[in-house]
Structures are given as C-alpha cells and as structure tokens.
Amino acid sequence: MAEGRYERRLARVEQLLSLEDHAAEVLRLYRVVLTLQRQLHDWAAGAVRDAEPPRDLAPDPHLSLTRLPEGQLLNRLGEYARSIAPMATAELADAAARLCSAPQQAKQSLLRCTLHLEDLTELAGDFGSPVPHLVFFARGFLQPIAEALVAAANPSTEGAEARSCPRCGWPPQVAAMRDDGEARGRRSLVCGLCATPWSFPRATCPSCLERDSERLLVHENTERPFLRVEECTLCNAYIKCVDARQDGHAEPLVDDIASLELDLWSVERGLWKISRNLFGL
Ligand SMILES: [Zn+2]
Ligand SMILES: [Zn+2]
Image (cartoon, rainbow, N blue to C red; front, side, top):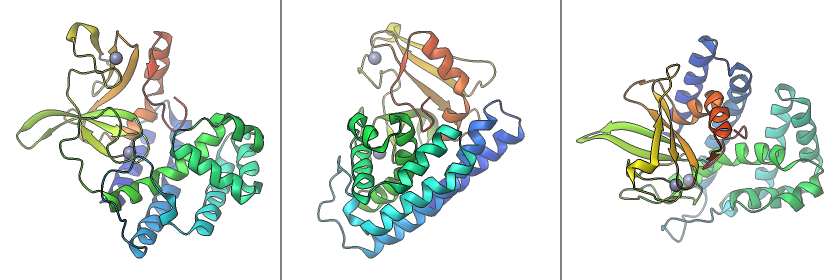
C-alpha cells in the first residue's frame, strides 16, 4: 500500500516537472527526498515487522521510535542528510554537514523533539543551524518512518473527525476531496507527518472548528482549478484542498508543495497555514 503511495507521489512529481511547472527547483529536490523516503519507509516497515508487536493498539500521540534499532536509525539520518546535500542550497548543505557530525545524542534529541512538535530553538543553537533547516532534514527523515510505524500500530481511522491526526497527533498538511462509495465529495485532511487521511466535515475550519459558512471562504484559481485555498475569516487560517475528482493524478502532498504561489498569495492576504510543508511553505 504505502509503497504504492511513494510511486504515485514520484509519478506526480515527474508529471509536474514535464509540464515545466514553475516550482521545478523545489520539485527536483523533492524528487530526491521522495526517493530516499521510499527506501526509509521500506526499512522501517521491515524493522517494525521484525520487532515485538506494540502493547497498546490505541492511537499513539507520541510515536515511539524505540521500536526501531537506534544505531541504525541515527546512521540512516546521517545518510539521508548527506544524500540530499549535493542537490540542496548552500545553507541546507551546511546544515546537513553539521547534522552528520553531531553527537548521536543530539541527533536523537532532534528526532524526538521534531516528532513531538517541541520547540527546537535551543537545539538549533547546539547544532549551529537555523531551526527551519534542521526541521527540513528531521521531518523529511521522519515522515516515511512515521508512516510505517502508524500503519503497523493502528490501521483504522474510521469515524475520526479530529483537528489533528488520529494516528500521530500532527496537524493536517492539506485537505482532499474525493467520491468515496456512496459518499460524494467526502472531505478528508491529510497528516503533515504520517500522511494518514482522515475524514473531516466539509464546512468546518480545521483550525478553530468554525462552522458559519459566511466566515469560511473558498478561493478557486484558474491555473490549477482542482486546487483551492480554504480560508477561515475567524482565525485567519488557511489550508489548500485538492479535488481529486477534477484531477485524478493529483497527489495532495505533492500538489501542496508544487503550488507555492498559492502560499505566497495567502500569506500576502494575512493568512497563516495550519501546517507548513516540508519546504517551509
Ligand atoms: Zn499523522
Ligand atoms: Zn478558523
């Protein structure tokens, strides 16, 4: 299943690159990230399969990395950063080098704090790198691992209508709309860490839960008609919604990254994104 997800995300990146998408620079870097993430996912899924079954099958807001062999995990973090560095900006490459040479304990703290959405300011001082650069590596590394961990721990999200991911507790990255059996135009939110989709009411702000339709605005755009910006005028949050019924090839996580012009537009409008993507947009 999840292997198929990575194939679909990579195929979507290729498709957008072939259309000479104006986000080409970001997409080329994302292609490298996705290729590495696919390998990490396969490794983590295998390691979890070989490990003891989890004692508690309830949704775990604090994903436990202890189910993976720690030495291998930290070595793979270094390999991941090292493999991305040649394709990245000079600033990111510098952060990668600092990450690789950091003590194991610092790497462990970085992964734990990122996973639990804790403040990284102090840790960034220890690494000598800006927080966003550290997050770029740590989050990209953790995404496929979280995907493998939650799939093994708790396969069902039926009936979940929460503001945060029912499997890992992270906020949603993007919304998606699709026909699902008898439910036409079912809206789901997609987790910014473990990529789990969960159903969520259409006319409700995913941040403050406002339901007054006059306060919830939908901004369509001509360039990408399958992708719209949903704005809440009460809390000023926005999230993009990918309508898979209009473009069957759209991949919510990829299309969110590719449509950076909509993020710039939204921020200029004074809005804030419920969860920025891997590239900080
Ligand atoms: Zn999640
Ligand atoms: Zn709101």
